[in-house]
Length: 483
Image 1 (tube, rainbow, N blue to C red):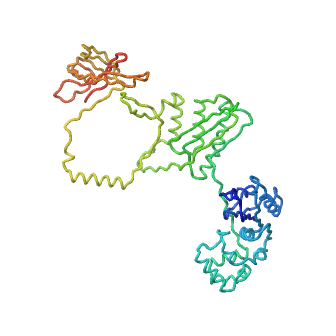
Image 2: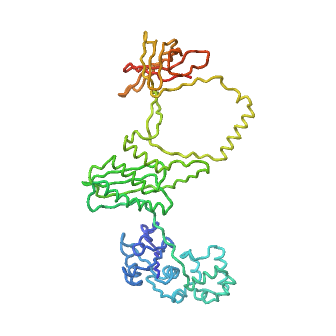
Image 3: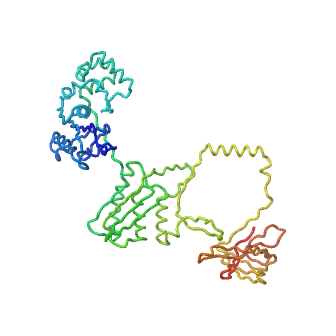
């Protein structure tokens, strides 16, 4: 049995999207929203709560008269029938409460005008082409058919020959013999979950079971809608009204509850809440999942899930500020950088752009055939020592004259035969770690240094180094060598 609820004039607060459907959900989870003011309910299985189907329809009519939020604050038409289309026509065109027994559909709907058959109250079973509707209605008027009953009495073979399959569908609607499942209204997906605990939990192991239960349900919803998430927010309600929040920003969209659980446990070990937990809520932002296709001869890269777990374990050992990818800072301080969160980025490159760049490069090469020949004869390179070599420098008048520096892998010894500098750089005087140093380029005879570095060219027997002196504490360092 099916119950249709139709409201002719709903209040402004109720006429919003899905409001009438929300009222129908209080009686049954199987609801079809036919129109903005018309819904159909499948009452199968509701007898244990409301009694018979007629009692359910009566209760709906009474409940709708109540004020919000329990009711709709208005009168509605309620119809009960064996198929949804008959219930829709009865609730739309008959006022009050209408009960149609199985097999009595034609007797109840037979006197309705044939024009009512083409209304928009049941679009799921109607003719889709407007032109066909007008042609069929004009044909029925020529035949002298004016009511549902007169249309239902026409022979099936004659209707099929003259009106086709659309005519047969309309004849079944007029006779009340349609059979179709409800097109259920899909509730808005929610990707959050919460639970209140019976007693406070202060240990990690019992809390992990609660988190696993909530994460399993959220990931199941993500899989059902073919989605993933790259942001997970957990809120722990503690004793005495305090709250503790955990936010996970993932580099790639994921939906593996095991990975989420391990990341949350690692974060909780690093930042333990100050009190016992009495409630847990988890919320995530749904996004499209990661789509990646590799070639047949390209080795598979590590999975982002495993990489994220490894980074979380490292952050637990050495601190979150010491794990990530280096980023150069916009400053004049030498080798200034910071560690930011590691993120994987996909480079999207279209074939059309690559072909266009190849064609442009070929065209430029043809136009300028000598561009590839014009190359510099020699290039001066600089190899940086990391870390720089701590040095002992003998200076005269502030100018270096002899250098002695070493570590496990290399050493620099010798007298300075040529020097250029100094060049003083300094900055960030307002900070405690202010920096200032003098830099020199010095040449040392190759035979007097034991670093094993080849000199530049055979014409010169000297090796060129970059050295500097830290002004705050007066220490000397060898920064690198020129090749």
